[in-house]
Structures are given as C-alpha cells and as structure tokens.
Image (cartoon, rainbow, N blue to C red):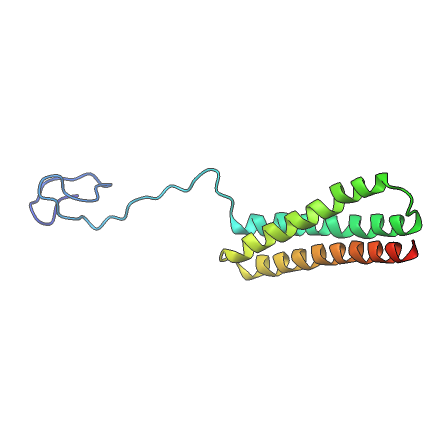
Length: 133
C-alpha cells in the first residue's frame, strides 16, 4: 500500500503515513478484553439462576410453612433461594441495560420475574408464619 499524498510505501496496518502524516483511512483494530462478558451470557446466567431460585423458593418455602420450627432451614433458604434470586435480579438488570438481542431479552425478563416470584413467595410464607405466633 502506498501513501495517497507522498507515494511512500506503507504497511497494510498503518493508520497514517510516517513521512507526511496523511491518514490512510484504515480503522484501528480494537481488541476485546478476554474478561468481557457478553450481555447474552449474562441473560442466560440470570435465567438459570432465576429458575434455580424459583424452584428452591417454592420447595423450601412450602417446607418451612409445614415445619416452621426448623430454624436451620432459614440458612438454607438464604443460601439457595434469596441470594441467587438477588443475583438474578442484578444480573438481569445489568443485561437489560446493555443492548441485547430480543431472544435473550425475553429470557432475561423471565428470569427476573421468576426471581421476584420466589422472593414474593418466601415473603408471604414468612408473613403467614408471623401471624400464627
């Protein structure tokens, strides 16, 4: 490749002529970070965490409703339902704030709804149990 202004020979990757400074019109190559997580993968991770928290929320919420004296179960509920549900909501919002494809957008919204339902179910179970005592 040659410079349009002075005719000096240039490399194919050159952004400008080193002799006269004329831009070549080549666009710089931008390397993506190896640590960058795509918004689609955030949506998929949020979906699986949302499904997990939904299932564990229903199971442990119903179990805690039947056996309210099992205080150890509160730690299990926190570790397997509340934390993944909160992580789902955070990841889902982060994925939705980025521009993602429509199929992953729907998946992410479903994940946020499932996490919200599981948290709501646990909250209602706790309210019912509190009214018993």
